[in-house]
Length: 235
Length: 75
Image (cartoon, rainbow over the protein chains, first blue to last red):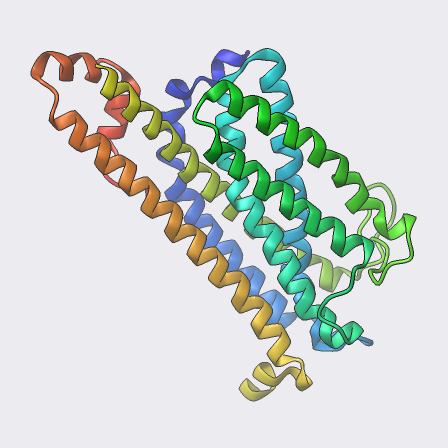
C-alpha cells in the first residue's frame, strides 16, 4: 500500500493541484468572509466582537489537526521507515505553526473586549502557547540536523511529546476553571451554537483547511525538488 | 451601512484587526512558500542545464525530473 505514497508517483498530482486548490480557496474564503462579516448576526451578549470567532476557532482547529497528523505520520513513518511520511509532516508544519499563531493573536484581540485583558495564563491559552513551542521546536529540529536519520528521530520524539498536549488543549475547559467557555460544537451530541453562526464557521474552517492544503502542496513540491537537486549533484 | 460595517458598535477595531492579521499572515506565508519553491526550481533548471548530454538524458529518464522541467509555474 505504501508504494502509492512514493514521491515519484504523486508528484504529477501535487505539482498540478495548487492552482486548483488556490482557486477553490479564494471562492470559499470570499463566501466565508461575506457570511462572517456581513450576513451572520451579532451575539446578544458579545455584540459584533463574536465575529472574531470565525477566524479564531477555525485557526485553532486546523493547528490542532495539523499537529495530530504530523504526530501520526512521524510515528508511523519512524516505525515502518517510510521517508515520505516525514517529508509530508515537514511540509505540513509551517501552515500548522501559522494557524497556531493566528489562534493565539486573534484570541488575544477577542479577549480584550470580552474579558478585559489581552492575555491570561488560562489553561486553554497556555496549552495553545505550548503547542506553538512544539511546532517551533519541530521546525528548528529539521534545520539543526543535517543527517536525515537524526532528524527523523528528533522530530518523532518532539511530536510524541507534543501530542500529549493535544488532549490537554481539548479538555482544558472541562478539567479546569478557565476563561474559555466549554465547547459549543459537538459531533456526537447536539451543538449549542445557532445554525446562523455555525454555517459561516464551517465555511471559514473549509477555507482555512484549503489554505493549509495549498501551503502543504507548495512546500511538499519544494522539498521534492530540493531532493532532486541533491540527486543532480551526485550525477 | 458602510460606517456601521466598519465601526460595528465600537468593536470594529478588534474585529477588523483580527481579520486583517489573519489575511496578512496568509499572504506572507503564501509568498514565502512561493519564493522558496521558485528558488529551488530555478536551481534545478540551472543545474540541469549544466549537465552534459549523456547525464541530462539519464536525469530526464526519471519521470519526476521531467515533471519538474515541464511545470513552468506552480500557480
